[in-house]
Structure formats: C-alpha cells, structure tokens
Length: 281
View 1 (cartoon, rainbow, N blue to C red):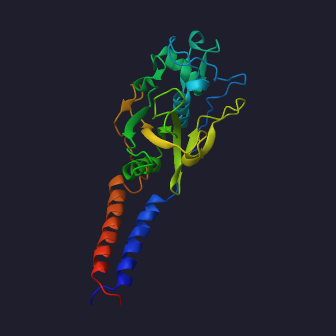
View 2 (view 1 turned 60 degrees about the horizontal axis):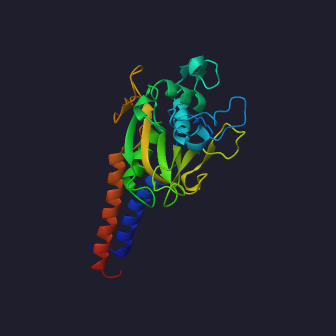
C-alpha cells in the first residue's frame, strides 16, 4: 500500500520532535557556579583596581580582567585554592583562597602573564582545558552546540570568548574574544552564563544571565574552553586531554546527538522526495 502524505509527514514530525527535544533541553551543572565581578572596586577586599599582567601592562582587573575573573570562578567551582605570600599579595598580607584578586596575585608570582595576556598553561593545576572554536558569525554552529551540551552534562563549565558587534571597541581592529564569560547551563535554545561584568562596583558578584542577554549585549561565542578536573594534582594544566569521567551520567554522546539530527534531516529529505511523487489521499 503506498505511503500517504499524512503518514510521511507524521514520521518526519516525530523524528524532528526528537531532534528538537535534544536541542531545546535544559541542562544544569551539578552545583552552583561561584560568581565574581571584575568591576568590584568599592570594598575592603576589592580587587578591581589591582594591576593586571606584567609591569609593562597598564591595565587593571576592572578594565581587562574578565578572563582572570572567569577563571577564578571556575577554579572556585572545583574547590581549587592557591596561596600567595605577603610579599606577592596586592594587599600586603598573605592570603589563601580563590577569587580574582588572589588568582591575579598568584599568576603574577608564577609567570601567568605575557604582558597583558594570560598564559593559559600557567593557570593553577587540577584542571584540564580542551580548546574549541565556534565557526559561525551568527550564533552557535551545530557541532559547537553539541560539544557544549555534552560538557555541561558531565558537570564541566565552559569559559567562552565572545563578541557582540563588528569590533570589540572603538579604535580597535579586534573583532573576536572581546570578552570572556562562563557558560553554566542551557535553557531552551540559549545558554546560562556568569558574566564577569557587573556595573555595580560595590558588589563582588558577577551577573547571572543568558548568552543572548549579556551585560554588553547579545553574545556570539568565538573560542571556548571546556574546563574539567585534571587527574594530575601537581602538574601544569593539560590542554586538549579529556579527563576520566567514570561514574558521571554523560547523557547522549556528541556522536549520538549528531546522528539524531542527521536522521531527522534525512527523514525530511525523504518526505519531500516521496511527497513530490505521491498524490493526495
């Protein structure tokens, strides 16, 4: 018996619904993400005015410290702490813990900067970084979305470079990685983030928002790093290695999710071909 249009359309819709469910799901990290504000300059323990980078760098944390602030939040998420001696501390007192000020001091003392730029390999150990690039100028491409969803299901946050306009700032030709945020979850077709920019200089906390409603605007991801716990406790952070995920509920793998999408697309294509040669019932 020949397939009817209703049957073909029904099969295609079921497959598409499954794919849409994978894309529109809600994903949350297993515990809260610590939140820090790079603009925190008004407080006894404020870090915003601390010098960033080497002595040749004119910037401060509040001006250009979004990446250090994002890293401090992710390291605190993994309960990583560091210690700085009084001679290395911007406060003049020895400190142990994790916040942008402590991390900034620690990076100063451990070769963590190249002029104003963070040396990725010099961040404290206990984390592994996997670098990815979103190859799209208008949003997330399907592969990037699958990788990010998979990481979040494992309980791994993502530090993402973003932009929101043609250039980062007036007088600059830079157009990517204008700002850095932490991706903390997914809701519908967008992502939850911790934005290190909070205009309230008296608050030490960043802004909990979504990728499409960032402090600076609707963000588009450029580079992004999946940050996972590292099995090596006293070694530099590894880049490009995936840690042991034993015991974690990983959910659908990136390959399985991609196959679901491909099946849905194939179903629609088949439906179009069949309908083009099938008369109405």
